Length: 119
Image 1 (cartoon, helix red, strand yellow):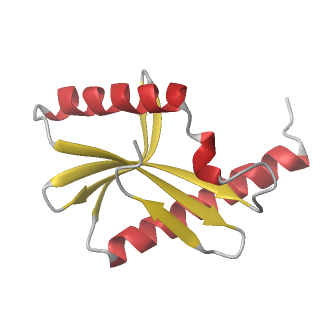
Image 2: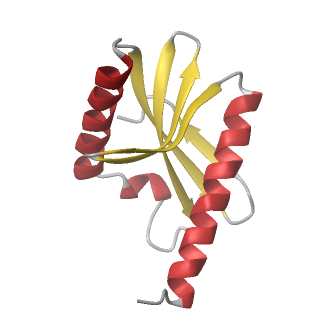
Image 3: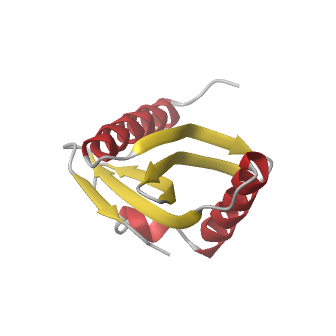
C-alpha cells in the first residue's frame, strides 16, 4: 500500500520535530538514551536522562493549531501507554529511575514549547 502525500508530509513533519526536540534537549544538558524506543506497548519518541530523572518524551509536531494545541492530542490512552513503556524500560534496564512524562510541541516555524511533568 502506498502512502498518500498527506501521510508522507506527516511523517516528515514528525521526524523533523523529533530531531528539533532532541537538539533542544541536548542544549538543556540532557543525554539522549533512546530515540523511537519501541516496546510491546508502543513507542516513545525520546527517552532522555535529565539529571537524576529519566524523561519519556512525546513529540507533537503541527503546522497550526487549527485542531487545538498539539499537547491536547496526548490523551489518557497515550498517557497509559507511556506509563507501560516506562515500566518496560525499567524492566529492561533493571533499575527504576525517577521518571517523568514530558510533551514537546513543535510548530512548522521550528518553535518549540516544552512541558515537563505534562502528566
